[in-house]
Image (tube, rainbow, N blue to C red; front, side, top):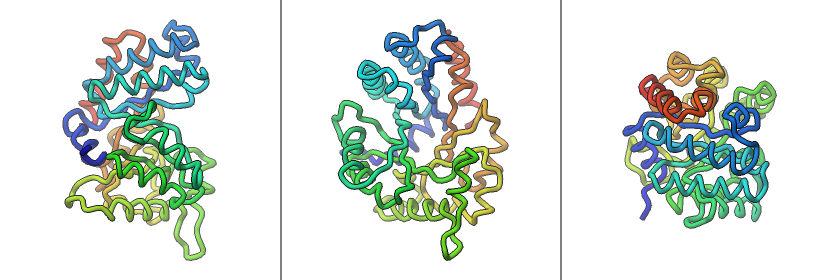
Length: 281
């Protein structure tokens, strides 16, 4: 039986450090690498990054949109990338931010989280703004198959503040409600004390004092914390400590441009990944 995602993720972080490598092959980056903006360039880019960073990151995080924009052939490259990562033992987190209800949510779950699915991943990002409960088909399937998910909670984009910081009738912030419901899911299992949950949260590293302002204490939970905003977006080790406090050991340092900008030389990407791994251990 496959070990829970939270256990496998913590093992990977212990072995390789907390850096998650974003694989975001947008058109301008392919051009900067001297690659064509087509599925052949997409494939060369993606597999080069995986080979270069695989020994120094706990997971890769492909952004699904940059593969989908190339149609069926682009999705085929994503499938190949995921299989290659699985073969070399690198965890995969698909950044797809899916969120729907009922049979549609179940369809997304089967596409990405069912064992043996063509686009099988270890975890996927999910949007809870049709309700965390609406995500249960994906969360239940993930937990059944030893997979994971990361639920959007507090992002750093300005428009997100109006929704995520909004207060319910009892004064609870929407983001705080999402965190509480994820903590409840993670706490419902029979995992040993100290083990990470398999359902994590997406919390930006550049949100400043928002957690304290909204009365959210991430130190009390078990959810791993996928944190964009490091590197080119301005956050570093000091922000990890200041923003996440006692929960810092569960922070996954999501980095894209700081790695991908080192290409197309694989050795340069590998050096950048190794330096980031040392910085955030």
